[in-house]
Length: 288
Image 1 (cartoon, helix red, strand yellow):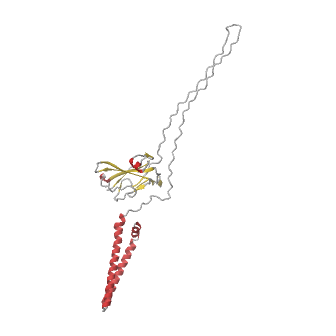
Image 2: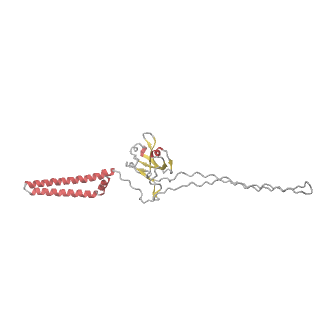
Image 3: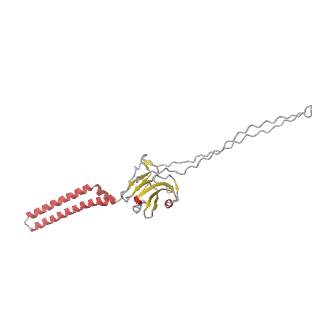
């Protein structure tokens, strides 16, 4: 169906030219038939001329209907059919390799032991002429003990975040969207012409997209949470804001993205997850 509509839209000028040529051909047939009816006197030939005139009218009517059908399809049917999702960048972009953060080695404090103290030695007494003339050698003083170094404080724990903050792409900040098919995309760094985060996450990791608005009916802030592995989504892949357009105060919405690790998509949407990246910026858009 999409290919047929695209064919009509691409070659619309040729279909119009074919219809106009058919109308001109029918007009020529009609003039020839009337001329033949006026110049002949036989009833049979007049009937044949009337048949040719009728066929000419049918040809002109069919060509007119064909032109009108092509114009109507291009004007009303083709804009209502959602266009296929287009890639943001060329498929030859280099794949993303997440940085590997290794914990730094923690030096252990060392206690310097003092050197062993030499035991005092006593020289044996020698007999002399006087019975009380025993002499001893003085005890040497122990060497000074080297002061021990203070313990080194342990370093802080390494962060568990393994991805950078995802950049937001569409809808841009402050955009006003009139259509019902709203497409969200993120992760593509326009300055570096590459993705800062993976285009597809592993099964246990999700992009957690949160769309926030203030509800008119409930008079409080509300949020819509969607978890998925790819870097884009729309009403066909998980998010349709048609029912929330009239409930949001002033049609104002905000959204952001964070990479999380969760056991399943339901656990991610319920908030049972652990963050794997800092949260992105918060963009706003309007649905008038």
